[in-house]
Length: 258
Ligand code: CO8
Image (cartoon, rainbow, N blue to C red; front, side):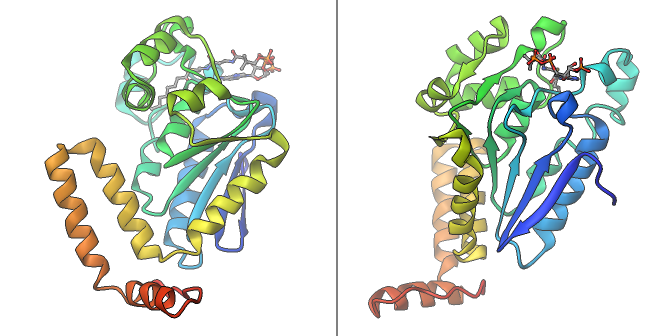
């Protein structure tokens, strides 16, 4: 697939995807989402990649789904699923960790896309919001579901009902983002975090991701049991043997993803 709305590169073992519709503040249209889904699945299948970073521009991670493209859709256009909604769930099928590196606006579908990632590193310029209500619509890619889980019901209600934006400091206090970095260091910091992850044992990284995601879908008892089984299964890996032996030998481990 030829990409016209994203830029894709690799940085060591990190796959980097830049949303690239600068004139529309990276508004997410069907073409961009198709390209993003395609690039994500390719990185997920590439054994040389251990972690993926999605970023936007200095001004916007993404200012939402493309309003111009959606404006005249009928209910049937939306419901039948070939427009707007297609490919939005692709990112959830990615088994490697995905980091959102957010500078500027992450609004509407842009905020939802960031929340679909495994964690968010925010530039001090980042602004998050679910302003769909101002357009006479509402979040449609998980905003009303992931936001309350991330920042509490009260703050999610506030943001989705008043459409106000949250700055990076508030987003960090509320737990939406894992850390804030100076805007000019955003990509370096995100790539460094991704490289750290990519240097770990990939199968164990995937088990950790799966286990933490399980926390959203199960009771505590079920989640703890799931984690216990995953923990046990790490002892079937060569990387666990290498990791513990390296510690005992006082050297750095060399993981072979086995
Ligand atoms: N869609 C299309 N174009 C956009 C969007 C957007 N979401 N956001 C900005 N643009 C365009 C503008 O139209 C403008 O284009 P042009 O230069 O041709 O006029 C260009 O980007 C620059 O924007 P502004 O001139 O408005 O820039 P400002 O710095 O003045 O303002 C803002 C920046 C505050 C971000 C402003 O652009 C804005 O409010 N944008 C809209 C934000 C918004 O409402 N987002 C929610 C969209 S709805 C949505 O996301 C639903 C998601 C459901 C997903 C469901 C999938 C399953």
